[in-house]
Image (tube, rainbow, N blue to C red):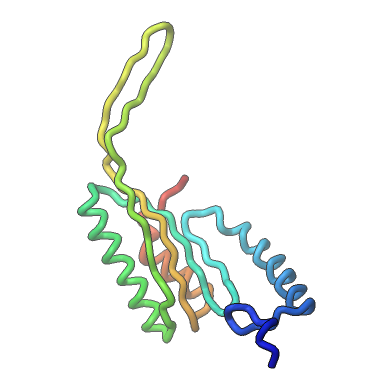
Length: 149
């Protein structure tokens, strides 16, 4: 086999497979219509990719504990279905001190307040389960703390 025409995964890089990838991209674009919510699932080659946007109440320490527990629950649910975990990760961002400035005429009024929650953005990349199964798992584990942007 000519290894000069292989991509990183060992797949051939010829015109036919490029066309196939393009067709896959078309299907992929169709699935993007459902990715505007806080939890979405898509496929990429043999992996199932779930994305989630969360708003977790409380300060950073409390939110970190909740996120860690929920992510471990996702992992447990995936493996109980016979799936394999590729990667489950999230970035937790604490909302800091904020100010709202309001001007009704010439004078400005300022209101200071501390954030009361943290935002998290993450993905779960898994194998050997169905996309619908991952979507169910993510909704079960994160459904009560999703972030509506």
